[in-house]
Each structure stands twice: as C-alpha cells, then as structure tokens.
Length: 269
View 1 (cartoon, helix red, strand yellow):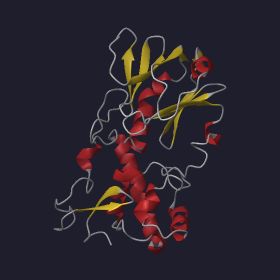
View 2 (cartoon, one colour; view 1 turned 60 degrees about the vertical axis):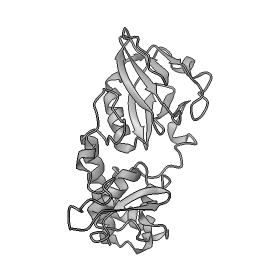
View 3 (cartoon, helix red, strand yellow; view 1 turned 90 degrees about the horizontal axis):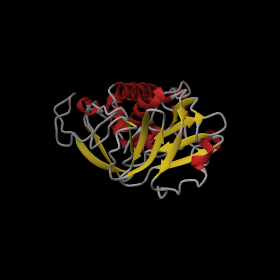
C-alpha cells in the first residue's frame, strides 16, 4: 500500500502540471472505493491547476473554486504519458487530459478514490486526520502527550491515522528500530527522551524514503515511471530470521494490530 513517502513522491512527479489547464477528465469506471461524484468532470474541465499538494495519503489538486482529492488506495498508481500514446492498461479508471500529456490513474483493487470538494480540510475523509509527521507540530512534546493518553502499544499508536498520518507499517517498524524502542512497549511507558528519539527517527526515515523515491516491495512506481529504491536500505522490515545489523540476534516477526511487525528483541526494549 502506498504510504506517505510514496504519495509524496507521486505528488512531486506530477507537480509540473501546476499552472496548466486540465482540459478534461475521462472516467472509465466510477465504481472505486466510493462512487465518483456525478458532476466532477464538469466542475474542473478547462480549469487551471493552481497547486498540487498532499495531506496524509491524499493527493490534492487545487483549482480556484474546487479541489480534487485522490487517494491511491491499496494498489493505485499514477502514470504520465503523451496524449498520442493511446495504449490502455487494464484497470485504467481515470484519465486527466492536458494539452500534450495525460495523467492516468490505475488501480487493480479499486480501493482508491476520487472526490471533488470546495474545502479539502473540511471533507469528512480528511478533517479528523492526525498531525503530519514531517511538520513542526510533530515534536517530542506532541508525541509525549499522545503517548501519555493511551495504553496502546507504541506501534499501534504510530499507525493510528487519527493521531499521526502516513507513517505506515514499514516506516513504523524502521523508526522504532532506529530508536531502539520495542513495538510492544505500551505508549504510556515511553518517556520524553524516547519520544525525542522516535520523532527524530520518524522524520529521518520518512525524509530518506522520499529522497530515495519511496519503498518498492511489490509494484510501486512513481508517476514519472521511476522505481522506489528505499527497500535496499531496510533494517528490519521483511527481514525475519536475518541477523540484526546491530547485534547477532535474529530479526523477529510478530503481529500487532493485524499487521506484520519486524524488530530485534535484543536491541529494542
């Protein structure tokens, strides 16, 4: 599933379309995770894109009066191709047509979504989301307050989109390893110094993953066709029974909140 770094990489790949006119949208399948709004095409046809941003894992395409909200879901991806290139792939659901190029939304599992709204921040899918982990607001004091209010395992807290958005399963495991914190630790047990280490680790891991183009575990590619290479630098995720890079212990795989979690029992306490 595309997480924050993959979505941010995608946003950066399509950002050259800012200040261009979206001529039209062609929707081949309205039956995504939610039914695509009936009047979406008419509201943004022949309108100038002002900015393209990200909130959590939503790609936001802003016009003067409306914004498009695109979520890639479990398997969604964007690709850019020339208008004269008429090849069509199975599961191509939406085409954003510009003067010379087009952006195509492909989603095998159809868990992605596309909405139009006047105010994305007040949309029901966004307004209750948590803090951005790369923002200034997400600091040791903020995380310590979150931790003090719940008895959840710290891994579950980091995965709760109502508290912190976009960290995701891969990056939560990697950040906890870098911080030497066990994913099984109760949040209330995490002290302020550990919160500082964890915040720094999360920001470092996410920034590095964005720099490297996201994490390719199955088939993630950025919209410009580049593959994510962060998988080459993973320390624990997916490395069950392999030697820890800090000690001679084996990396273990456990299930927390129905998600696979990888950690070193010796280094993470």
